[in-house]
Length: 208
Image (cartoon, rainbow, N blue to C red):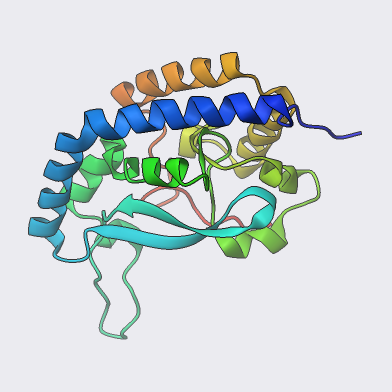
């Protein structure tokens, strides 16, 4: 029988951990976020934040926040250019350093995300998951996760979802701390930012 250890007191302690760390991180990163917002505003104009509907725990839709990394550029046919052509120099730097993810600390404070969990993907993917893959939505999505420290966007979708489900089944606060520490190393090394050979800014679309 499938199960998740995130219930009762486990959820209480995880939430307390998320609130304390996210609150402290927001205060500590305020100058960096202000500088990042200014850089985005000067290089890409308004809006500074990118807002997109994403599925959270049990598939509940919420608005995920990120700093913008791409221009609103379209081709002669009026269709948006591919992501890699709209990605700006500032946006590329933000993705490499993961500074674009900082506004999601607000999603954590609001209880829509956790510091650690499966990354929130696109809403249209919900109907494409197998029953096993859909278990990634048994917990809150995270800013980082087990999949992010095991290849990030450079792994296959199958491996990524397998890592997400493994996290759901093996969660503990100690594991969250381990993942957060490993995330720092992943960001410093700039590993797995995009899928190799996919010709996309991050990872090709999941088609089921």
